[in-house]
Length: 356
Picture 1: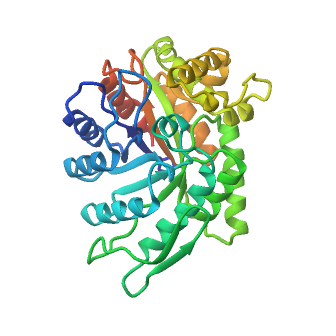
Picture 2: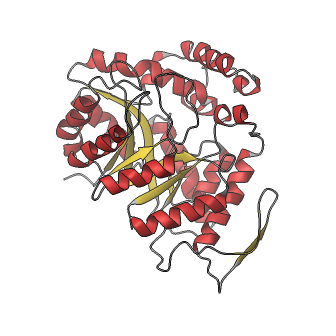
């Protein structure tokens, strides 16, 4: 019997779909044994195929429509959302759905910031301060107010009154890649939720997080090391490869730091799209970068193939220290396609997930 490995699944709403479809997908995941479902926090996606509902109300609807499955955001940021509102929202939801929520935090995506007049500058600094504020407010009361003076946020005798009865607060995962974010994950987060890693680079960054935790004298035993990755499963390996390759290359194009760790010889110009004001030109720039990424680099970062292939790949990440997998299944028609999505979820549950 192998060590327990947990599995989550990203659920979504495609363009022009009724809202209840995202709840039904979460119910399907729960029925088939997944431990969690996660939803994005986007204002836009850059494609007409997607819908971008407000995530926290969507999270509440999913939690209300399911019985046991954990539900979370992957991920939100402190540029678009004030940490006080995040703290209040999660405190409220924790009372409605005790021990069923998790919160993913990251520095944020300029493509979801600049079109709305929000500056992406100092994203990591805002995240670091916001994380402190959320923690402090979750422990606040009228008898225990919080004061905080930072560069980006401040509190003056502030406290939350979200409920009369406090429930355990949700664990906080960080989507961390760079050295500063990895250190922050080790010193201040409950878990780590990256994507675009091979088992080797995953272990390398996890070791950095562990070292940071030890330097801060933190108990690391309960830390939730997660991998948020694309996945395509089929009885036909070639079909699974076709489904996942394009999205995998696009994701690597978005994170040059990850690509350089995986393949130091890979050519990437850096985040040049962040300085392009036109959203369509941004996306076209990313697509051109993605086209030049070696296929092997993309395949080595995702869970794909036959059930046996997926089991072998998962085992590689598990040996690297991963305890939980958050999967974005890629159907035949692309990330937002409904074609064979539920069939992939069912096949993964029956033939791969059941191995643990």
